[in-house]
Image 1 (cartoon, helix red, strand yellow):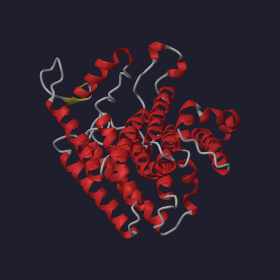
Image 2 (tube, one colour):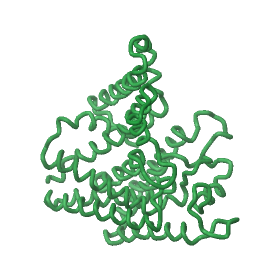
Image 3 (cartoon, rainbow, N blue to C red):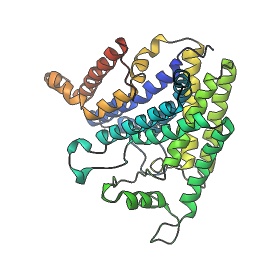
Image 4 (tube, rainbow, N blue to C red):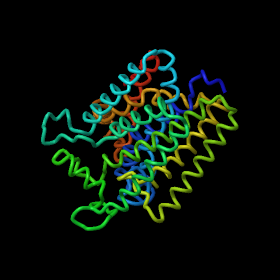
Length: 363
C-alpha cells in the first residue's frame, strides 16, 4: 500500500460511528414510538446504553470514536514532525487540541451554554475522554519506543483493574463494582463535588481506559502506516481483534465488562470489535478499492467532530419540523421517523457542503 495516500477506511469507519450518533439512535427510537412492537423495541434498545453489565450496539460508539482518533495519530503526527522543526510547537498544538476538545465537551454536555454555574459539569463527555486519550497517546507516539507504548497500554489495564478490585470504597470497607458504589465513582464525586455529573458514568480513573482504547487505535494506525503488505496489515488487525475480544470476554467472567466505568475488560472487548471493523473496511475500501458506496460515510467521517458537536447543540429534527410539519397529517405515526430523517438530511447537506469546499474542522 502507498503510505502517502489517505487511508479512506478510517474515515469510513468514523463516519459509520457518527451515523449511529446523529441518525440511527433517534431513527430507531422514533420508529419504536410510532410502531411499538417487539421488533422495534429490540432495535431501539440496541441504541440505548446498557444499564450496567452487558453491552449493546450503542456501547461501541464511544470506544470506536476514541479508537479512530488513535488510528490517525501516526499519520497526523508524523506529518507534523516533518513540517515542524520544534518539538515545543508540536507539544503546544497537542495541548491546544486538548483544551479545545475539553471546552467543546463543556458546550455539548457540560451545560456551559446555560451560563448557570450550578448546572456546570467539569468532566462528562466523550470529547473530553478523547482529549485525555489523544494527549497521552500522542506523547507516547512522540517519545516512546513501540515496546514502551505497548507497556503503557498494558499498564493502564493492569493498574485500573487493581484499583477497581483492590482499593476499598470508603464507607463500605471493601472494594465493590456496583452502579452506585465503586472506587471510580467515589473519586469523581470526591474531586468534582457539586460539579460532578451525578450519573453512573466515571471519568477520572476511567481515563486509564480512555488512554488504553486510544492507544489500541494508534497501534492499528502504526500497522497500516508501516508500509507492510496489505495481507500482513489485515492479519495484524484480525489477530488483534480476535485476541482482544476473546481475552476481554473471558476475563469478563471475573472482572465484568462495564462501559459506564470503562473497565479494562471493556477496553479489550470493545477494542477487539474496533480492530475487526477496521479490518473489514480496510479490506473493502483500501485493498479492494470499493469506494463509491462509502462516499456518504466519508463525508461524515472527515468532519466527525463538527458532526458530533452541532448535532448535540442544534436539534435538527426540530429544524426539519419547521418545514415538514404539514406531512404529519398524512404520515401519522410514521411522521416521527420522517422528521428525524429530514433533520439528518439538513445536517448531512452541511457536512457535504464543507466536504465539497474542502473545509475540514480540525481542533
